[in-house]
Amino acid sequence: MPRILVVDDDPMVGATIEVLLQRQGFDVTLTDGGETGLAALESQAFDVMLVDIFMPHMRGFESIRIFHERAPATPLIAMSGYAFASSASPSPDFLRMALELGATRCLRKPFTPEALLTTIRECLAGASAPPKDKKEAP
Image (spheres, rainbow, N blue to C red):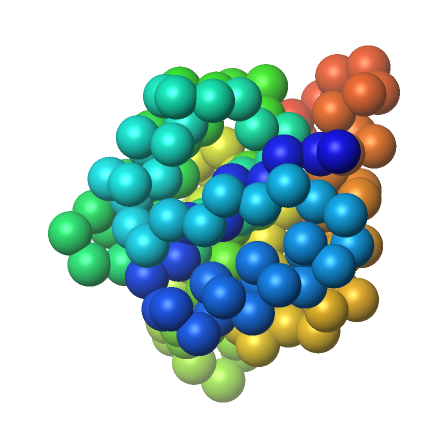
């Protein structure tokens, strides 16, 4: 049974993801922020990590960098509901930044259960495949 670490400060989002993944047969560890997520990562191994980009106490970008450094072989899916770059807005592309810091994939909140499950399954399949060039398009 694949082990999934979910790091999100929003209790409703975390609980929803946890229930969805448990119903699909995943072993889920839910944490409410970067510090508790890192503590969980230090005490056990995970097959995939889901990390929110923007959280209090430990900024998500900092979390992503540290999680990736501590478990570089574990796929990391960055999540965010914050503003994204577009042709109509000069805001930064936070998900692109997350990829540059080590995220394997990114999900924009709100996402569908199908999008989450597909992304996790792709990460699990990729973890068992030979390493690919890090420069592939997201």
